[in-house]
Image (tube, helix red, strand yellow):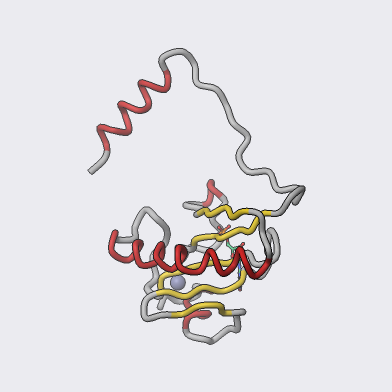
Amino acid sequence: MENDCIFCKIIEKKIPSDMIYEDKDTLAFLDINPVNQGHTLVIPKKHYKNILDIPSKEFLKVMETVRKITPAIKEAVNAGGINIGISNEKIAAQAVFHLHIHIMPRFENDGLKMFPSKKYKEGEAKQIANKIRFKII
Ligand code: 5GP
Ligand code: ZN
């Protein structure tokens, strides 16, 4: 429990949520401002900021809940597909600093635009891939 964390308060049932799944380690509830009907957030019950500080074991538990409930969400709202995403840090639009995975149902012509793409310059991709590979621990 982290002071002033809205998702910790949801876990503690200090503020209400439309909960759809709960187990020992994770919780899933509807996003209060959905991109589409059925937009769900899955969180670990322990407070971690985002993917940059959550240990592997805890993250896998959250992902397992995502895997478990995604088919139910898709069927319940009759979605054509599902996007899954995590915002990490303010620059990446993270607004709540308790790790959460968005499960976002998609519908034909729902108007959502995901990521507009860019192009690499000649040789740039290789250079960046090398740089990243070197940093993996
Ligand atoms: P982020 O931008 O951090 O990835 O997403 C935070 C999400 O949390 C937003 O989509 C926002 O609508 C949702 N959210 C913020 N406060 C609450 C709340 O009190 N209850 C629920 N259910 N969702 C919230
Ligand atoms: Zn929290």
